[in-house]
Amino acid sequence: MNGIGGGGEEAARSRSAQAENKKEFMGKFKKITAIFKFLLLIGIAIGLPLLLYFRYPEILNEFRDIESINAMAETREGFLFPFFVGLQVFQVIVSIIPAQAVQIAAGYVYNFGIAYIACVAGLLIGTVVTYFIAKLLGRDAMQLLFGTERIDKFVDKLNSKRAYILLFIVFLIPGIPKDIFAYAAGISRMNVFAFFLISLVARTPALMASVLFGGMMRSGSYMGMIVLGAIIAILCILGLKFHNKLADIVNGFYEKLVGGGA
Image (cartoon, rainbow, N blue to C red; front, side, top):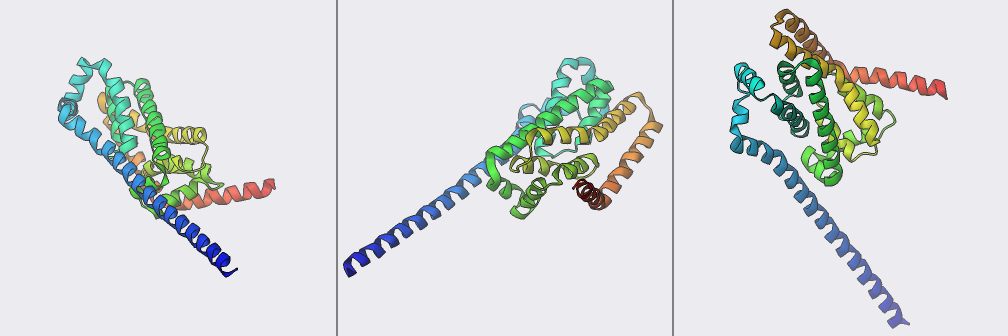
């Protein structure tokens, strides 16, 4: 009996050791995979700008000043539309340049309607790409990129009942960083179509203002630029300073609405 009992205990210890080894192996494999995905993302983020800088420096030179942009607009009109779409996509994914800079430049080169369509297309494509990059690379890679505590906080917000309201406020107010929300949404439980729709609709007022500003710059409407620029600056300052308070107000309204409905 002791032999049988001892054999059973030994088998149990063996199974336990195998389970621990498997768990340790899977942990290491998970970390290696996350690092590989992270390096792939960094390679894309760094590789695209370097490719543009070293392989196609003439494109950057054509945007060095207003005169160069004017000359390019006159000679390469067909090229500019896909360029602005691609530039807006790149801005959303990498966020090394302000979105407003791309949108003002588009408004300067094109009329309001065409510039708006180009920027909307770029924003939509860029948001879709970032969403699915995060979904493909996974939570571990996003934690390496943004930090575990930070990305987990954003994911928790997007998984909450108030996620749609919060998302609308964040994308509506100018000046609030938005890039991390697209990545966090990709690893959250938020409905993909709702995320795309809310982010696009909420961005529209600031987008329209930036495109309009570019058009005013081209036409020489300096007073309009001053007024619109002042309004945008004030909204940015207020948004950065009071966005938490606004979120609290909306949350309170949401609680009353839900409570009243119940």
